Length: 189
Image (tube, rainbow, N blue to C red; front, top):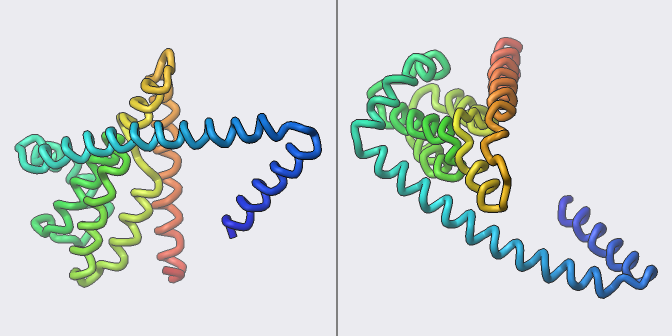
């Protein structure tokens, strides 16, 4: 469906630029957009590589163990019934930590590993759904990827979004978990 929408918008833009004799502006905008896309891809690749490396280092140090202990009360309430010594629980802690630190795509491999381990559990599907909801809600304390992007793109105050992200994260995670519990009670899940 999205392919049709984007195709329609591109064709409409080209027709508009031909009718109003703005084809040169449209052509320049296409090439500038392609150039900006490549630049952004390189920046994002660097950020993702950096954060994946940091998460790999953290997962092999005592820092990760300390962070996991700190967030265990929250995770044990959300994922009740899951063995705290299981690999799935460990991956969920790592995934949750990566999301809290705003590491963006660095949390994806950890989430996928958690899903693989949760598939082996008895109540795995229920926990997988919760994990997806939490990842979609993107609970963040330090939105480091967004701050890094804003900084690289020349923002004068890249940290000014932190309070707004906290509010949005809190609302989204609360809504996601409330909806999950409501649907679970109504036996829709």
